[in-house]
Amino acid sequence: MIDIPDELIATQYAYNGAAGRAFVAALPGLAGRFLEEWGLRRDGAAMYGMCALVLPVVREADGVPAALKLQLVDEETVGEPVALRAWGAARAGAVGVLGHDPGTGALLLERLDEGRPLSGVAGGGGVPGGSRLVGEAADARRAVTVLGEVLARLAAVPAPEGLRTLGDAVERMLAAAPETVGRLADEEERRLLADCAAAVREVAGEPGDRLLHWDLHYDNILAGRADAGRAGEWVALDPKPLAGDPGFELFPALDNLFDAGEVVWRFDALTEALGMERDRGRARAWTLGRVLQNAVWAVGDGERELAPDHAEIARRLLGVR
Image 1 (tube, rainbow, N blue to C red):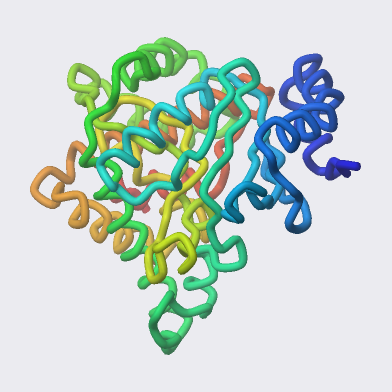
Image 2: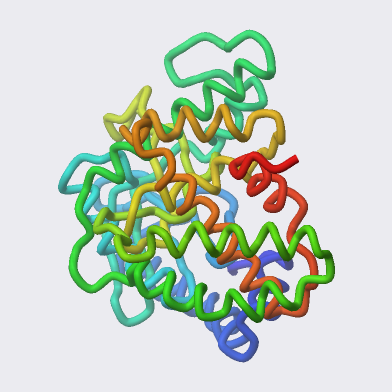
């Protein structure tokens, strides 16, 4: 029996409507099918995020620990196996793919240490193979530094053909920007979002061609396992891949575990890790593009104000007080 977490059910119903309900209804059957077809046995409690159910498993043929990931395939997730394989071929620090079913999007992935996310470093959890850092602020900065190292390895890989592109996303968000700005209730926020859109227009003609993760925050990086030969390594998972400029990757690390006073430090550390320290203007513009993208989605769902953390990130990067 597969127990589907209530939170996953609620998320699927809220965001994906009929498709989400169909996905939830099909999950027990999908899990049973791939446990049998791929010769897997359950090896722990189910895990989940906003869009996927993940079952810890062991491959019965050789005893290899793995993770069976079942998710609704959409424009954000359809490229996941393509991206993971490209990063795997380049040894770029992403979770390995052991199996994939194109018809359902089911993935059999390398097992990571789910009990050791990078967010634990920010909270004082220490680092693989190292001693605990001293001081909460030092821990948080250590996590940012590690994320920057992971991000640099991922962004060094050129995007394979056929992925969604930042160029297409920019075209859509700029087309929606005037209406989005106009529907905000607060005049200061209208000015702030208009400045974000203006910054994006300056870089829109060069959207880039790197393979981007898009959602690289501290819970999407886990410690590798010694039995997979990755002891001491931090490994990225759960990409929503697209082809674009690495500057578009910074926002999740600023917003996740948000600290207003650390926004500029984190931004500088990440641009340095990516080798963009001499081109921070472009990185800033693309980061403001994420604020704009999120605002377009939120206003489309009926919101009339910016998320407070997003607005503060924009203010800090624009030098607005």
